Length: 168
Image (tube, rainbow, N blue to C red):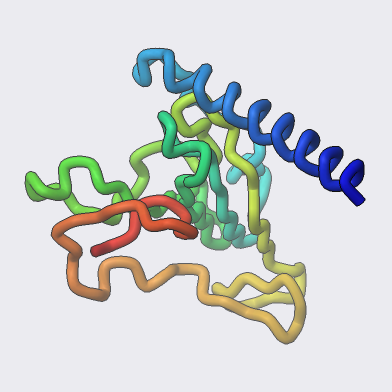
């Protein structure tokens, strides 16, 4: 029993150390020098006529990246030539900037050096005639999220277990 527990603790320590090293490597770099270009995960909108909804997550910058991710949604309506990216960012909210930012970057861009993980990829089927995206016949969601319909937050903060900045 002791040997198994020791082995589990050793494996957990190695995994945490490996993840921590990757995060700390980015933390020791100037954030403006980190990769922020496209990661190549979003399909070319010109070649993809059907509606697309994708959700991405990437580790945050600095030590917070050990525990937190930044998430965003990329939406492309039917026949659209580009995506719309929606994300919550707390920077400059205290100076009047909106917490929900639209099209600040491409749909699948790196988040300050971290390649995003695509969490959701919903596409319309050929038989879908409305502006809805479907991953199965019983699961449909509107293509345009109701962003901006609620009150604008005046501050954001990271919360344990949250996916990045949350309205306060």
